[in-house]
Length: 117
View 1 (cartoon, rainbow, N blue to C red):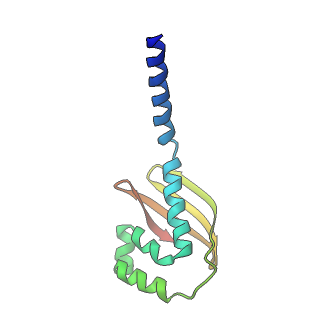
View 2 (view 1 turned 135 degrees about the vertical axis):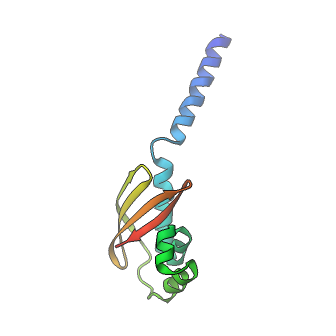
View 3 (view 1 turned 30 degrees about the horizontal axis):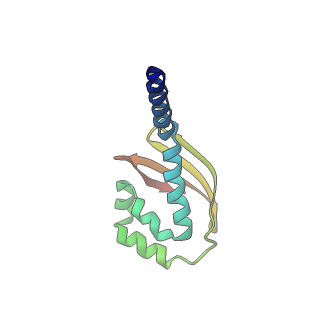
């Protein structure tokens, strides 16, 4: 009886751990949150810039100023497609500015915006 209980406990623990990662759920959640938060407040995207994009823009401060200066558009965004392959991801997003493709790279465990088109 005790052996069965131990086996069931270990099996339940393994199932919980398997549910927490490995299937991309956490990655999908993280990327979706970056996109949705950026739809509500574009300046939040500036906190998730990859190093190459940050260098291309000049700095996070430049990004924030540009986000605040941009005309207000519809703040709702829809993620039409999200594909994650290893440490790269691409999202097709529709928002107030039309359709945009956002690419991401995973850097030290965090998703960063690599480019937008």
